[in-house]
Length: 350
Image (cartoon, rainbow, N blue to C red; front, side):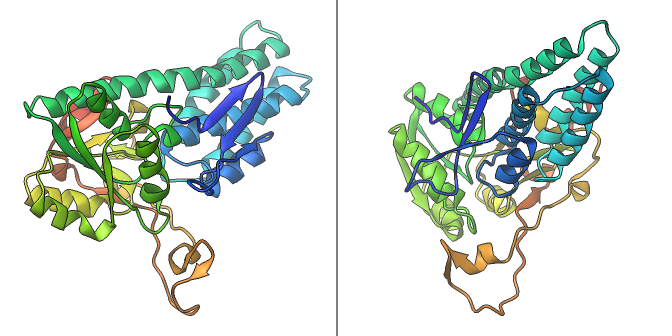
């Protein structure tokens, strides 16, 4: 059974504190929108799909506790708080897309014949449905991605992945890691290699932990070993996630993804980006327009609070980089199919 990073039960929201993994499993109560913003910003919950779900459910949780005297007051409250949640992690577009969708629902409810209590209940239900829908989407991504990779190999495959894209980054199955799960379920996975993902070590702390938890054959490597790995081992595919995909197929993902794509191109290894359609931002023409979040320098100069660099050391710490469309040689795997980057505009622009 996959790990549960998000628990929503009887109007209560808890998230697994991912800063403490793998040494400690501790769930935190999220009771307000401010709590939701904090756990997202502090990376206690992370992964583009999970950010959107926790953001919206934190709003639903506070809605349950808050009285409203009119539909216009409720609509205004939802609008302001969704705008606030979007600021927690600006690179991932899922929160923005989820906010737009929820606001559209809210505006429609304001203009119909429902009471303020009916309006509140339907907004909460909209947020709750995101959990089930995300798992369904991820399983479709997993199956379609497995189909695409296994179409090019009649033998068991070895794959490489970066950062964390599994149950801890979604509602419970995973995007790129969901593809790996699907290949493993078909008994066609020889081995998976996962990078440590400096400086936050999501690969070491989270992905390696998930793979071990589900008894998937895996090996952890340092970020600077990927080129040597591709040069000495037969890697059949690289699968990564995405926090935002632009109209031309450029993708933003965890820092280090771009260099993997460059090396994969040199070694003729198919490179796949796995993401739900909620990560596609047709409003942006290319990757240069994606806002790249920069994280505190302390994340690079410390490990678990222990200094590894001189205090005066100057750092550059972008959380994400952009992989150009031409390096995504395998395709972009969504719940609606596997697309070449150049196919996105015609498929999703309408």
